[in-house]
Length: 174
Image (tube, rainbow, N blue to C red; front, side, top):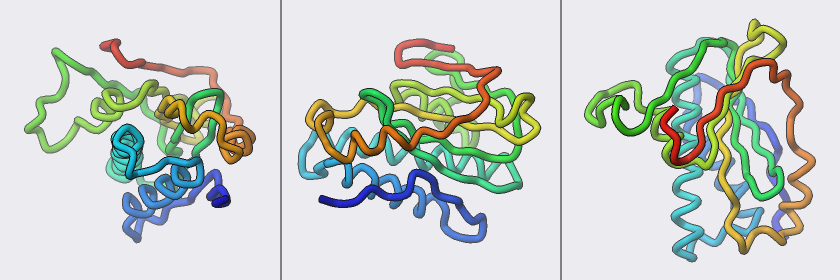
């Protein structure tokens, strides 16, 4: 059995961080039993990896401090979270009012909202002075729900203050 990768990854701004984040999350998914030769697994994995890239790119583009990626399992959900050092209120819109697809910037969170089952964010610390976390949740494929590594991964969830949290779920337009 493949061992689980670390539940968090500190990302260096001077390296190819999106590729590093994608590789780390790909390793997580393989350890959980994702089979990229299975069409439904491959499609699910593509969504997860695109979301990981978009979350990291967003943090790189809009912040200047440290960035870290975390992952954990809670129930049937794999959650990826990117933590940075700058809290701002986030907005993402799907459907009518969304950023046009030909715009160079501004589509990242909308893409993640369209791929993930949940997209949430909140402040680090009580008032956000320590930054923010942005988390995307993906329902695990049914064939992965009995994985021994999945059960181990449920212990990886970080504890962050959640005084303020905003969410959007598939099918909503908030």
